[in-house]
Length: 163
Image (cartoon, rainbow, N blue to C red; front, top):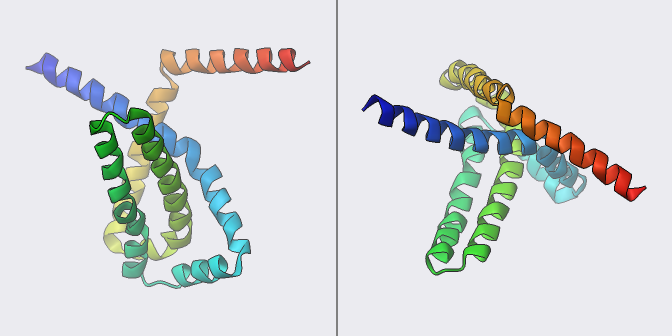
């Protein structure tokens, strides 16, 4: 039983680490991309309204992308079930990219209001520390270091090839 528990824990850790790595990779650049939309008058107005939300309104706004993208993810699962794997995967990855971008920007806009919620202010630092510890464990792994070496070699090769 302990071996099975250890195997499931490793699988969960691996999958969770992949999601965290994707979120970490995309969080800042995608938030900056969405922040550029604030140049548009309607988008800027919407962001001002989001910033002015009460803590409970900010929580609702922060959770909205999850609700909006849930049917899209269900559609991707349906496509997988119908044998349209490539289309389902493209839809799922697109939803993940858009969802991460939207969530990252919304968090930037709502974090001050969210931190006024006592339970959020108590749990957010714990979540962040836990997430950072998992990412540190991944970054210290031999697989990560090997991937980083390979990445550097590919970049050098690409630079040489381009001349």
